Image (cartoon, rainbow, N blue to C red; front, side, top):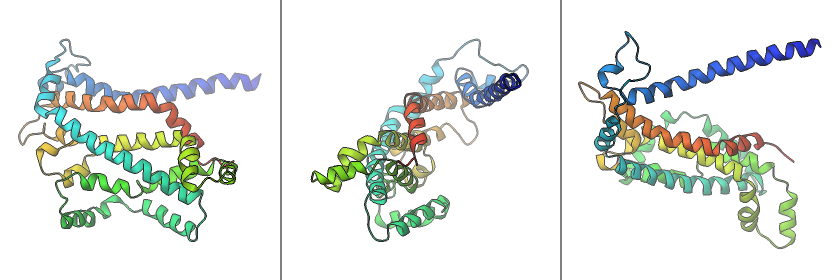
Length: 280
């Protein structure tokens, strides 16, 4: 009875904390959407604070899309996104398979070196990478933003998939080899189909990373017609003023695909993370 009496208060406290944290996470999104329907002058008003506009100005979205050249920048972003997703998923799956299912000399040492690369800050390699792409003549193109994905897809993606592959029973490999199957057949017909949750996690991370990437396009792209959505948002900032209502409207449009993507993949995301690292 004592344990049961303490059980209900603990759950109340736990849910109260979760609600408070959820509200804290939702407030910035609410403020973004709220500001997108207001005039710029009303956004600054603090006495009294306008929690929701009495008159919703839908024209902010129309003006933001027109000013930003939204369709063109969406196409540019999708080109980079699709290229990264194809390259990263294919090569990271192949690398993870080699590290988890194939026995070869020096495998553990190479994997250790791969993990150490995750500890290297990205800012350290920015200048050397830019100099290399500049020497090759690929600045102001999408090549520096897409081609690296075809060389492993990132250390974190390889690590995540390797841990998931280790949880797949090796009996499946042995049974397939008895039937005469090679590594390529086992990889494409057995391992990858069973690793769909982990692959979905990788796809979600790649989508969020490319869709919201600002630093990469800012470094390598110079032509305005090649800008991505993240760089397009920067155009609303002027030297002397900023159209905050248009910027908030454009930001709301850019955020919506991320929310929709997460809503439809959250089950796979949780499943993929939960099963990663479990060995049979």
